[in-house]
Length: 101
Image (cartoon, rainbow, N blue to C red; front, side):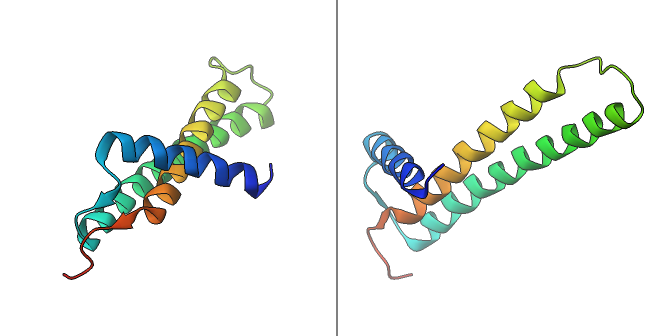
């Protein structure tokens, strides 16, 4: 995927968030908190994907048929992590109304 494709997704997310929450944060503190919250959610999804990748690898190396569809679970968490990271980028791009703290 080209970064220009991701840039378009960031712009779409920014437009969606601006329509829902307004086009500016109230302060740099608020902006930081929003970015951090989205980033932590992305990391959580990555950690869940990693955990299932490890479970999947364990089943593969022991030649055991997994009881769950690890590929689908990994895909789910990867997509959600990407979505959260797009939100991080969009919120980082969002303007700050009052930069004084």
